[in-house]
Amino acid sequence: MGLSGIDARRPRGEGPADDSGRIPPGQRAQASWPVLHYGPVPRFKPERWDFQVYGATADGSKRAWDYAGFQELPADRVEADLHCVTKFTLLDNVWSGVLASTLIELAPPAPDATHAMVWAEYGYSANLRIDDLLRDTSILATHRNGEELTPEHGFPLRLVVPHLYAWKGPKWVRAIEYLVADRRGFWEERGYHNVGDPWQEQRYSYQED
Image (cartoon, rainbow, N blue to C red; front, side, top):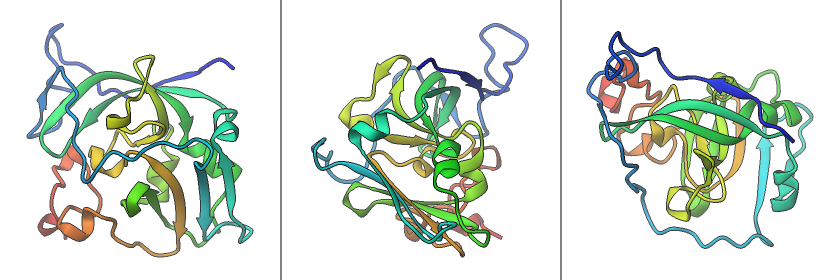
């Protein structure tokens, strides 16, 4: 199945080397992609892997795909920069995988669901508004720039939410839980901002209204 493409990058500045219009306040462009995560890299076991959508679903049921089934879902591509709260920005990425909106269409939330908790290996979590997942640039990525993600960068599946700081897109994602009220995720419980908009420099919880 062919890939369609979405370009989510901010417009460049005037000069060919001027990326000031695409880099949020307090960030710096960086060529390399450092490995940053909490805890060990999980060991991938395809025969035991699945992806689930549950919680406040429209019909009250849970949906699940095994590894082979997930690979058969419609593939897509998003061109988007990555902004890490540690202040580096990785420009010009091409993320390939399954759009989060595709999963939401296949397993829709209940009308009163407003948020989601994205669960990853070892109980790691990140909370998002459902509208964040519905953005046409939010993608459950399997590849970056045509190369399969490495285990250190989230293989087999990593959520990428380009309009928020990168911690809102966990590595090693396993589930989306729909919520009828917001609930803080792993880093939000430890002092990070509940929303995480890099263009507003929403880094820490003390900045919240």
